[in-house]
Length: 640
Image: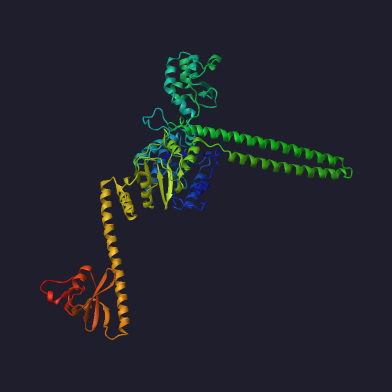
């Protein structure tokens, strides 16, 4: 979880109404995942915004921005519950001293990362004083760490503090961190800080500025004054970072206490060859030594060269067009000057119109040129290393996917919930149209279910209803038929039911899940057997009824056939056995005469074999279920 204050206007003229409309999607036909109004007298967003605007209007002294826009972003795939979001919002606002202030919040899920927008009124609703949170990024960072533990959320990388007891947080802050996240390339700031130990030892041994500059030159670094302090800069590149990023001992005041007033490095020091220097390199493990990095550099250079060539051609074409227009304008102007038929006033009007037309044509040509430039820039846009890896992985390049997942600074996550786990084979299921994320996660949407492949885990994007059968099917493709599942009992039970109901031959590592699967399989088999028997009985019944109808039709043509009727409970009692008939393969019926009607009842194969040994005309007794007892067998039991 990362909480960050959004960029604000420098003139302090931000509009709370516009911000509220944006975060609540008033101007768009989009649904929001969660919205809330806090510390206002109204639950309606519209009325609450009017109340907040009125409160801000009560403060006429403050010229600063009166609105604080806080954005809370969660790791890809994590969607906290409504109760968790409310607690997170309350605690974050308290951490920066704005807990009692009026605010409107809304959560959006229109990107890969679920995020919460909080619009806060910096004017206190009672005192009407403006409250400006100072060093809020540190307060928010500490609050995020507490909340991640409290709600068992995934731990995210945020601020890198060299003096922090928590050494696991590795993300650079500020522009350096943004650059690393966007491009996948190590920043200069990180590269310098990774050499803090040898530079610190060099400072301890240095007795003069010249000695310190010599040690820095070994890394192609140089100390330069900037503002009221010093920066560490690359000697031959436009890259620098604060000297104090290496520690307090590198601050200007501490360095001058040790070495005296600052001195520039000498020409002799500047001519020293470095042992190593900063160069932009990928932050994925082993990626620099792979063919992927070489291929990226080659394609990048080709794109840059092609773009430069296209822009140069466009520039030359533009210069020719401008020269042509100027020549044409000059010739027309000269022709007007030499025209003896035009009077002075007429020439002045024609000159004015000619100038107007020339400006319009020049402006139109410039607009076409700008559009052509933009088209070239778009066509030959140079992708960052991370963007290039994502595109390669989307096309099925498993090595690119492995490089994305091997980043040395992937966020450390807590327990994976609602997940299938196994050994990562690096598969990419391109027919499912995967969406590869910058962190190496692959997002699939299958039958309405959003499934995220993180490598060793294949999990639902959140605790939401979805097609679990599709998730199980994908897990089988990735990890085989023996699955390990993590999640609460409800999720595990749903997975087992989905696997059994969809007819997938899987087993589970969890003994309880496996026992449940076996029970459900047995119940399913029994149910299917029962349904099969019911279907057979219905089919037999249709055949018997058809045979009865056919016999009754024949009865109308001949008088020696009795009326045939399907046996019913009301027909129980004494009757005369009239033999059996095989009306189809596997279906035999018994015939019994009673009160001038021929009763028809199905026989099992065993009954049919037994009844064939009985003489026609033998008295029988039928019970309500149609079971037959021959009179001579009364003492031996019932026939079936």
